[in-house]
View 1 (spheres, one colour):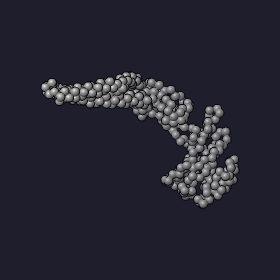
View 2 (cartoon, rainbow, N blue to C red):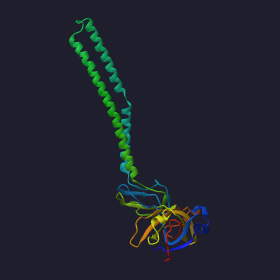
View 3 (cartoon, rainbow, N blue to C red):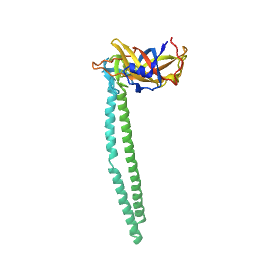
View 4 (cartoon, one colour):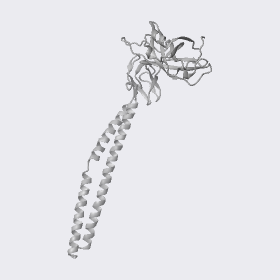
Length: 309
């Protein structure tokens, strides 16, 4: 159970922490609370996205990683062979799609056949006996066939372009499969545990590594609904005192979440996020799990009666 005690006005509470009074509302009362704990915001078991043998785990425990960094690898030799085939098929399809020689030849044939047919008709009109009706029909058929062949050439060219697009999509699908066989970090953080070893078989969804974010943490605790309502504390400034072996580390923050649900013990949960810069020696001063006291700076207009427990 969280204990509470009414303390100083907001200005005095802020001054006690070495901060400026103007950082908070002028009309406020500070309420000191104990029993809070530092917690992680992001804590992820990074899973394999495809089934297979883990051929490599390149991230070590304690290593800083960035979002998108490759932490491990699932066997992908077969997929890479399919990638080579898909690339070759795409190159061939691109060449066919770029070539319009057959299309131009068909269009030229139409022009020649049309000219021959029209010339034959002119001669037939001037001298009906100079050219037989059969020859006229043959020239007309040749012209019509050239038109259909031109349409067919256009269709084949369109099919070649669609085939190129299909080959490109197939290559992208294989490359996506290869990428899915990489175990990637979903966030900036620190590897804190290896859950699998190289050579193990993993199913899609099996956790491989645990990555947590330490550069931004949050303070969590419970407030009694007998003494506070969520509206009393939502968005209020908060002073955080984290107990460490080297003393008390003080941070300023703002309450970013107030649970609208009251549990069976008449408590509701709140938390506030704060930055946790890495120290010069590479270590983090504030660690998840440490205990903390907080001072919530309540607006007087929203404060309620409180008594000491």
